[in-house]
Image (cartoon, rainbow, N blue to C red):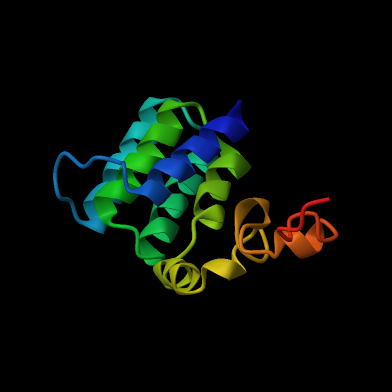
Length: 134
């Protein structure tokens, strides 16, 4: 459940679907996250991790409002400890995202993306798709 929530939050972040109600500074976001984490009953270690996650997201180039929304959603969803830290760890930096966009064949799925798109399927199937009929 926590992995699913972590993945969903990271997905929202990556797709840029997180909404921002008000523009805020990094310091305002940290103060507000700290207050909300304490209000949710997180222990001191988890409060510190929530603030650290926010700081790491901002350092990676995520807009303050989006980073705030992601960390708030995680806290509200019950994400704690290492799962909270994983949000920042698994979020690519702006530079990494630009590199992935510029070179889509270098993604996590290997050559050509999901399912091997871009491969020579005819060669992979022993010539079965070469256009020759039996």
